[in-house]
Amino acid sequence: TKKRRLTSSCIPEDSDVKKLEELFQKKTNNGKGPKDSATEKDGKGMAKLIDLNRANIIAISLKAFRDFSHKELAETIANLDPDTKIVGERVQFLTGLLPNQTEVAAIKGYRGDESRLVPAEVFFRHLLAVPRLQTKVHVIQTISTFRDSAKETSLAFQLMKSVCDQVMESDKLQKVLEMVLHIGNIMNEGTRTGDIGGFKFESLLKLTQTKSMDGKLTVLDYLVTTFIDKGDRGVLDIGLDFPECEQAGKILLSDLIGDARGLRMSLQKCRTELTEIKSDQCDKRVTRSMTSKFAETPNKPPADPRASLFAAIKARSDGSDEAKKKPVEDPRSALLVSIKKRTDTSESHDSDEGDSCGKVKGSFS
Image (cartoon, rainbow, N blue to C red; front, side, top):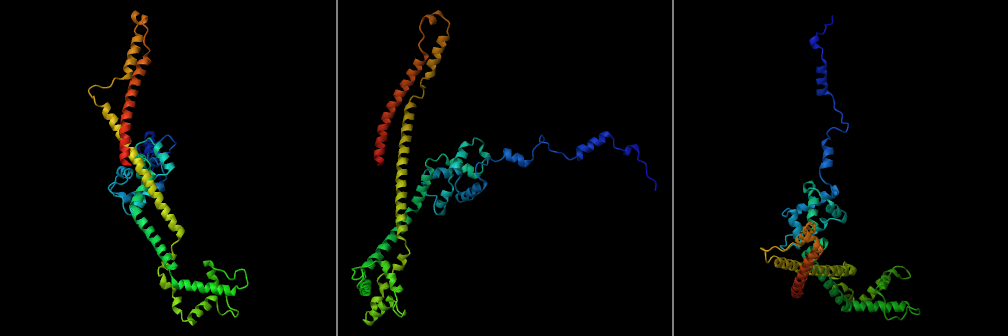
């Protein structure tokens, strides 16, 4: 077959080759071109102030407070939940919502736009305005759980006391223990432990460990047999005298004492926070009172102490002979006099408000 010759119109010209390269040649990113979306997102996306997993956990916990905005929830915590909206399991979620020291430092140091923050970081930013945050959350939890916890601890103490009284007043137990003492003195006759007037409760374990010569009976078996032979089988029904002993035996006295101490410490924290709140309220009243006194003459703005300074500077810059002959007053003196007057006025107001604040504190106590 003969090859067909290409006509000149079919051969690409230089301009066509250049256009072809522009359309279909792969572009290489040498660092000067536009960055991809992922890189741009890392540079100009979210602030990423806290760990991603931690932020997700906080976001999940915040779903339990959907009826609050981040700002409203922070304000509710600051005011100790006055409307009792945080109840049930939500009270326990509060502890997990608190930022740690590293997170607080990161949020405080951020000066960017809030749109670059994830929900957890936005919430932490609102929490920074809450004074004594840890204590306030503890107080809210104490208010929510104190009554039930105190009742539960009180019932446990009552159960322990009731069982102890039953044990001390049990005639059956007294007879059994007296028999154990007599048997022990007989078996230990002639030794240093013979003819004793009492024994420790730990020694009762030996009743099942000490066996007869043939190994068939224990001291406990002999004790039971003795009461049966004497017709005092009813003495062996010791459990009837204290039916709640099994339930009380599950309670550790050390845990019970620890719970009571925890309740006492929580109550003391509540009292301390109440004192702090009263002090904050008193400070706010003083501040409002001082502000209202300074604003009593709104038509007459207070004299700007800088005016005297500027006037003195202007007089000093004046090149007249009179200004040169007359000693110019030190511009700082007018400023200092003005500041002193304002300081004296503030001190007089502070003394007045201090007295009223003392009266307010007295009424709180």
